[in-house]
Amino acid sequence: MTYCVGLKLDRGLVFAADTRTNAGLDNVSTFKKLKVWEEPGERVVTLLSAGNLAVTQAVISLLSEQITDAAEGQSTIMNAKTMFQVARIIGGAVRQIHETDGEALTAAADSFFVTFILGGQIKGETPRLFQIYSAGNFIEVCDDTPYLQIGEHKYGKPILDRVTRADMRLGEAAKLVLLSFDSTLRSNLSVGMPVDMLLYNTDSFTSDRQFRIEQDDAYFRQVSDGWSNALRDAFASMPEMDV
Image 1: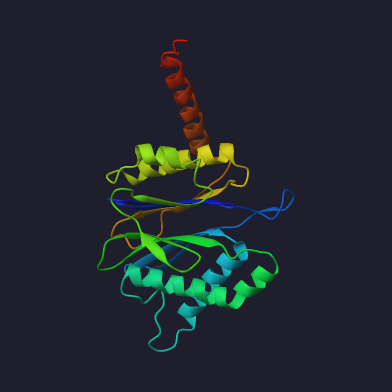
Image 2: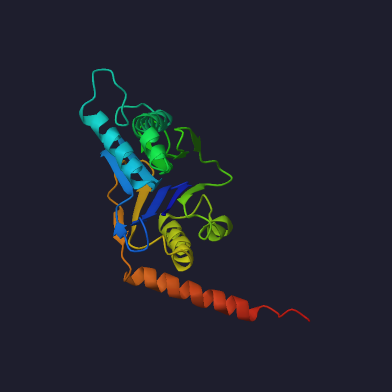
């Protein structure tokens, strides 16, 4: 399993993805699930992936090959005019891989299950954030709920529901996302460090604020321990039930 989060804020976008994959209790590996394509000054396209690793890698490879081997007039994620068109191209890539591999996966009792969070900005429009499903269809984030999650999302959702605001600073939002990961890591062994993050500032058209949070990262430990202590203090300060 995995856990990925994308936030759309007034100041830009925040992305985070864990790196754990497992095919059984004794077959745990680390793979990057955050992919970025960019043309500095023109566009940044970010894709987070969850689900069958072979399928997600096939989709990403197909998208990259389309860019390098595009025929004249062929639409790719690097020449599409809008992020909506980018989402449609990725959805088409998902359906193309399903057409190639779906029957074989079913015959092997395996599943064709993938989900993606797509976000970024193309010059001429504001940053946008989408979730793409196994069928290749997708939704776009709304103002009422300015974030998306894929993978093992239930443990990290409560704090996002309570705290996320569109006017957050990106550093503040990064802290929130790490707390969401901390809750997930404590409750589900299928999600694991390190965590890859990207903070994207509106109209910057660069992915230079991309980094990896390791298990022993000092800031992550400070945030995790501080949150645990704050929760214990809040719990202790509340009145007991009168029984």
